[in-house]
Amino acid sequence: MNNSFWSAFFGITDPKLNNLARNQVPNRQYSVDFFGKKTAVWVDTSDSYKLYIEIPELRTVINKKAQMLSLGIPKLVNDKGDIIDKHWVLDLIRNPNPLQSWSDVIYSISVNDSLHSSSFVYAPKRIGEIVNLFVPLPSHKMQINTTGKSLKQMTKDGLIKSYTYNYDGQNKEDLSLEEVIIIQANDGINILNPVSRIESLKFPISNIKAQYNKRNVLLENLGAIGILSSENSDMGGALPMTPEEKRDIQRDWYYRNKDELMITESAVKWQPMSYPTKDLMLFEELTADKLAIIDLFGLNYYIFSNEKGSTYSNVRDGMRMAYTDTIIPESKKIYDNISESLGLDKQGLRLVADYDHVPVLQDDYLSQSEALNKRADALTKIVNAGIGLSEEEMRALLNI
Image 1 (cartoon, rainbow, N blue to C red):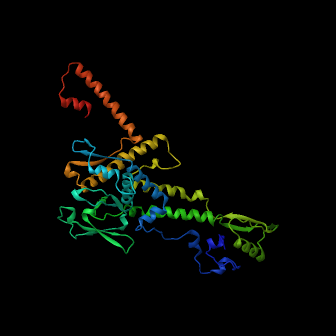
Image 2: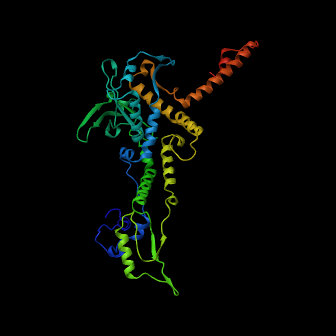
Image 3: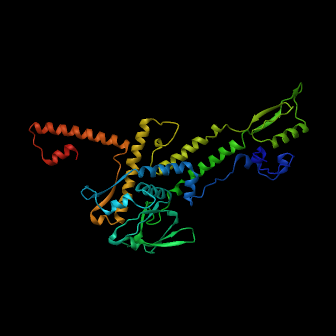
């Protein structure tokens, strides 16, 4: 039986049963089936990658953050902020591995960080401490082998002994501490192996999955829930259906597919027993759950598709806030970690991500430039007026 009302509503699966549905399964808890389960059902957040694949709202937010992070242009600078244009690390950035660009590498690091709060990169050092291979590793396949000592350790090798990469659960490969770069988010408690952000999303993700299930059931099976009752009457009042009429209507409805019409010679009326879909607040629930995901990852509601409030100004300001509050600070953490792991800090160098080319941020730089020009004009007038100022006072007036 395909898409039968009774199979969906009462759980009946045998198409040969012709008696009334309630009599066929007398022990079924109809109040529970009709109104839904009485206990909450939560998804398993231990497999965050599976949720990332299945839940479009989660994947959209994680991918958006990764895409924004990957837009940063890597630059090598010294302690004075001067740009260095010749160094082996620049060759690494131009060709990190055979299959990915540097932008792809940062994208992968961001996705792994969002799912597991940890990112790993295979970056073996060659002769002369040079690295010419930079491969992001899936965090859920990595195992950290600790030394068992977490207190009074002054170096990373005092905490981590080695790593193990699990190819398929059976084939494993041990990787030394020097071969792997680890980037971890701070959960405020754990020094190593921080709790995944996805654990905090168990409730909203569960509700998203539940409302999708509910909408699918409504569309496929429960298009109309209600009571068909007799509309016949005489001088004495309403006339009930005969047992034969009830049985015929019951049998007809039981065997109908969802889009088939029921034709009967009996005069009947329909009394609905369900709410319209819009009154179930399914879409409002979806929006609230998506907001929880967006807030956790530090982005802004207006940079995603929505039905209300998506003006040009809101989208632009939302993008600015996402970059200034989340993307730029997190990219600094990633690049600082890479710089330290590659030993660039010992050379007085560091990698930085430049986002000046991003259109929504260029407006900010234009405003800053105009403000600086106005202060420079004011300073020129002061100097021309014969007022002597020290270099420190001039810098203070220019706000530099």
